[in-house]
Length: 362
Image 1: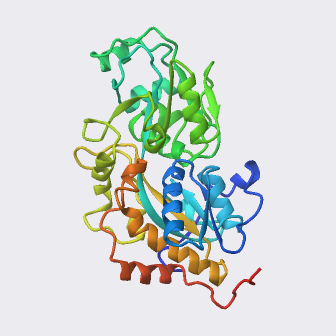
Image 2 (image 1 turned 45 degrees about the vertical axis):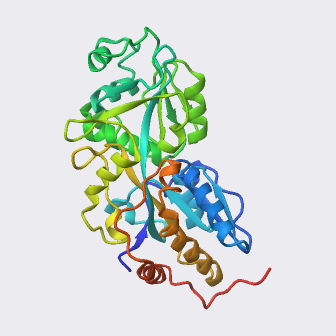
Image 3 (image 1 turned 120 degrees about the horizontal axis):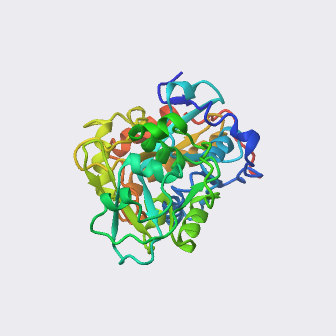
């Protein structure tokens, strides 16, 4: 098996039994992207730019969540599955061979709706404090522990309403990975999961998808939750600076995500070296709730579809990494990518095309 050909399993294999999948595959001439709702804003930008450069192409974006997207790609219901979840060796054992291709760097933002605080106010939270909020151990925003961590803010006597994803979510996986790394309470009682067993908290809200979570935050005074940076941009929500492994409180931003990506190494090999955790923030100034966004592709796609996929991937990994597209959408470009010719060669190696099985013209 090629080193960049990954077996996706365990974390996704049971999801098909629980969550619905996209009802039909893409039609001839279409590329259907299905998966991560956190990545969807950037995928929409990529799709528009690619279609402008390739007028005959059609790229459709759906964001049902990382778990469903992977199952759709594995089962032939989508051309490409998008995921925010890195894979451990345990998760490489089931559910068929899929090529795993990194496409961008992302950040999960802890955001809150506290209307009495001035716009631009910034919360300071560490892992143990954030874990206590989502475990129901803190009931009001003026709790002494929150006031001690935020002495410059006049925190209101307002009930805390936690909002979490109710679907299998890569955003949730990154969020709970940070809590598991930094909080003994969370590590022992919940753990890092795409679909955890959330603590039962009166008044807590569970919603499906990033768009619904952002909406719930904006409509619920006292709410606190987590969304991708691209979904938090341009809202009135307060964002938290999180404590990283170096003991620094760091805001979510494309530059601080790039610093966290130093965990990948000075010159990460493409694509294998990108399947690493960025949780914790890495070097000084790194944001601790960051991750790599992946596209997954089945090797069983027919030849003409695989050719279209390679063309889209080559665009995404070259022109698509331009900051006007990535940073403008709340993501960071991948560091130290090979040149265009080498990328084309790598994509042909990991996505060979299966040209002996072309589809019909219809």
